[in-house]
Length: 401
Length: 80
Image (cartoon, rainbow over the protein chains, first blue to last red):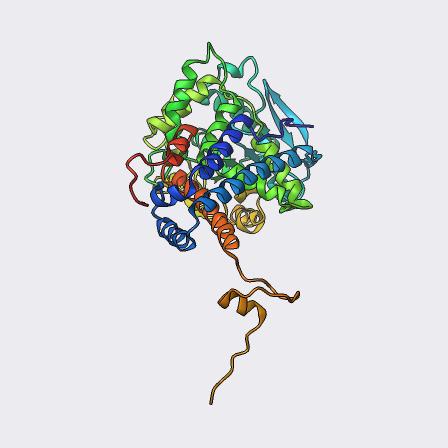
């Protein structure tokens, strides 16, 4: 299988543990939990109603027994869902593209066509191909249909050189030469699209190479790491820093560590997903999409140590981006240095990159426009509403004078 | 005038606890049915509760999840 071979979910042991804890505890003493559980304020009244219903039914012991049986059944269904998913064949079907440039472990994929070149920069976390996930769910293919010639950066595994890289190295020694190549090919400035962390990197790129970037589109790109809105990554930082102290030398930060973070954002998500899978909710294209998303989410290259340290300490702890202390090529990255129009797309309900974090740039940009897609962090790019919610508005903005 | 209410088997069983000898009807909820439904509702609520707390707390790693689903030591009533 190209570009990823672990179907996940990973770390599998963590997902099993979450399921055991959630359903095991539910089955231990449900009646007592209704009396004195840690109920969230949004549903505390529903818990009171259930308690009243239970009081009227008068069968506490029987209720506990039934809950235990049903909780065990849910655990079994979760495992069945994972088994069914793992036994299903899946092969990613990428769009036709060829590697036009290689720099160390980094490749650039050229999707071809006679259109105007456009650079696409994905996150360093998870594989690049979220921007070309599968037929019908590919922003790269859509851009090509609209008359562009997409060039997609594939970060790949950190090679001998990249393993010593920091964020500025990725920008100066990888993105800048790629941009040079594209502007030469295009005979002038080119538009740049950056997704998630790739958007933050693209922002620095545009600040340093304003004469080469015609437009900058940022999709769920974090900038302000001190927002009031929950910023899931910020809370995970201490655990990550602690973990990194145990990683010897220049060792990388493994994907499982990052996946542990994603699993902790909502420990119920995988249970709900795989029980739905077992119930046959995903059929046909939706089943392919499910597999594509799982494989994508559970793969990716490890992060170079210096990159991880700069993200965790510099971004999440010190908020260097917003404070304009983040240095690239020896100079702080200032949004005022970006001369081109900037389009910032950020969904309202994004828990990985709060909308507030992405939109924070607007106050300092010379020419910034915001857009709120009706989906989540990943759904905005590949979900059922991606075309109407993101791709079309993006192309309208790219075409506008 | 006395109005007569038509009582079918299901109504009878529901209201008076009569057992039916006829085949084609939808049985009313028994006590076990009610408890089964209540159990499903409880489990859905239990999971939703964890999801909501994970949003509030930004993140819910395994140790925090364990603490959340453990019984309260002080036996306090349902709270927010």
